[in-house]
Structures are given as C-alpha cells and as structure tokens.
Length: 146
Image (cartoon, rainbow, N blue to C red; front, top):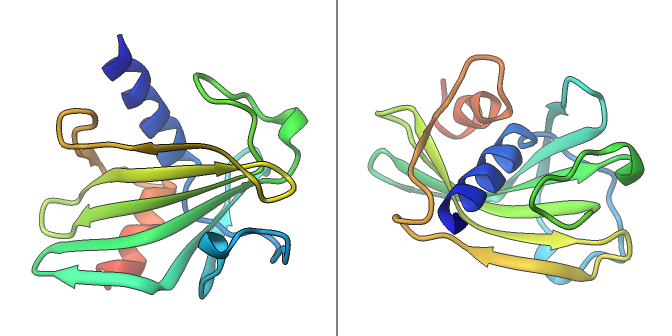
C-alpha cells in the first residue's frame, strides 16, 4: 500500500512539474537556485521551474532540481500529501530511455517552512515515461538538449 501511495505521489508531483513561481525571500536556503520557468499546469494553478545550476550529467543520466509552486493552494487537489505551496524535488532523467524518476521531495508551506520530506529509492519508485505535453517533457527538452 505504501508503494502505491508513493508511486501516486510521485506521479502527481511529476505531473505538476516543470514551471516556476514567484521568487520568495522567505523560502529556505534549499529553495535558492537559478530557476528557469518552464510553464504552468493545464489548470493554471501550478507553476513549474528547473534549477539550471543543479544540473549534473553522468552519461545518459541527468540529475537536477525542480520546483512546483501552487498558486492557490485552496484550489488545488492534494491526494496523499499535505497541502503545500511549493514542492522542491531532485529529479533524474535518463535521456537515452526517455524516463524519469523522483529521488526526493521537500514540501514547503506558504511561509517557506518544511512540511514534509521524502526520499525514494529504486524499489519505492520505478522510472516513469516522459509523456508528450507533460511537465516532464519540458524538463527532458531542457536537460537533455532536445
């Protein structure tokens, strides 16, 4: 049951990935970065960003940080997670296989305080396909130079 919830969390976070939010000086140091805005969710309520300074390449594997910012948390559906304003994740994309996975995530409230932190290993979350039109596709294009 825990693995299913973690997979759902990862999928939900992955689907809300790739855009960026307003800079907020109250965010913790972990939120600092060279954020590139990637877009907004179909609902218009989640902005996606990628920290260009965090990109690390090792052959086909690229690791980087992404940030999802919920514009209006009251309008957002949260399944298996507490209500949060920002989610900062460490992501890994296999550019050759066109799959991604979430390595860890930190959920922050509107004041920038950590609500929850999770780390996922290979057995917690399997790689997921990068689908057309998704936030993960925007990240793939950015970090894999496609």
